[in-house]
Length: 166
View (cartoon, rainbow, N blue to C red):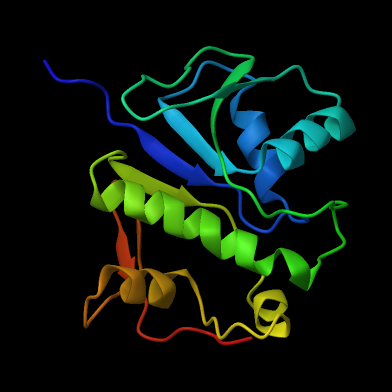
């Protein structure tokens, strides 16, 4: 039997709900997940939320932590100081870097899939970076012509015909 699939989880907009959701995962035993984010961002949010979470630096080839109270982290530089609820266009490149690291990890088989927390398209655009969404960003990074975003459950699959722009 092979190893369990390892998912990359990007923390999304630093001032948004994404970092909180990543840390909430560690409150119970969880699947093999590697959070792709800034160590400083998550450590500060642990303090703000009053959670008991140990951030474990993760290296490719290792099995991520799966027990409650621990979270495997692949650190990405570039996130400035941040307060929940106060977006900063200066963190936009960092947000895109986390997506790139996770996606490239999928392309080179370091990860078996990726999950993305919400990003703030308008803030990324305020930084002077043309960004219409995850789907188009990943399309360009992967060098494919056609993409579609699909939302799926066990019984239902919905593919989006249009996307919204900020």
